[in-house]
Length: 241
Image (cartoon, rainbow, N blue to C red; front, side, top):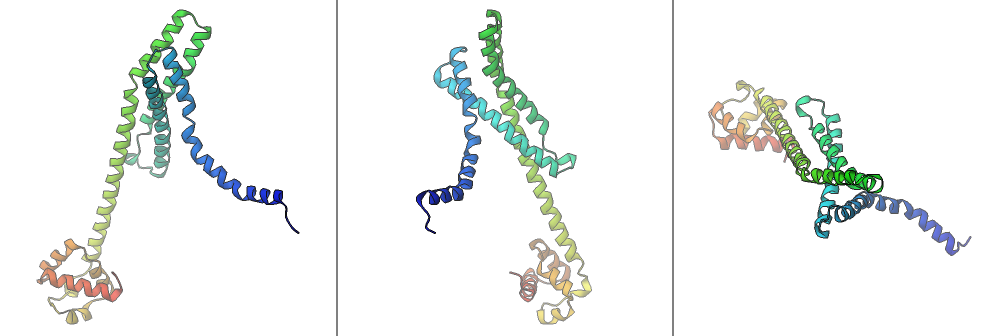
């Protein structure tokens, strides 16, 4: 049966609907802060008497601060759920403090000032403006907390990765330490050495670290070049690049 134009259009919509929704969903969170940012901008011009350019800068800074608090807070929350050790926990509490400050600032800037203007006395209106100015003055503190916590968490992740590398290196050294002196006679010729090696000895020799090459050479009275050759022969035999 031949399909008409509307049937084809309906089929195209069904095929592309999911992609369109995903595309819009990816960009919508980045556009959401523009609404409260614009409200903050208008209030800073009308009530705080800031210049237009400065009002835009402050409005964007406030929203970026809030966006950063939420994003960092969620990252720390899920990280702490995966890592239960107290010494490896991310500073989640500091992010909550920063977000509480942002929430106070945005509520006073966009809600309390409007309320005071419509329903409050002149004294209440003046106090609402003073409180907003006070919060804007302290805005550096939560921003510095976010930077400090993110930097500290990044350093913590580096330490954790370094600990894992050190443990892995220690494990490799321990595995090679299982090779006894009797299993590696003081001979430089690989053809004479190979028959004395077990499969485990061969594997440990193939994964010998550069630091252990010199130790092994001194231990068995051969040159480092000889030990490197042994390692190459062992890797070639077990198929390790």
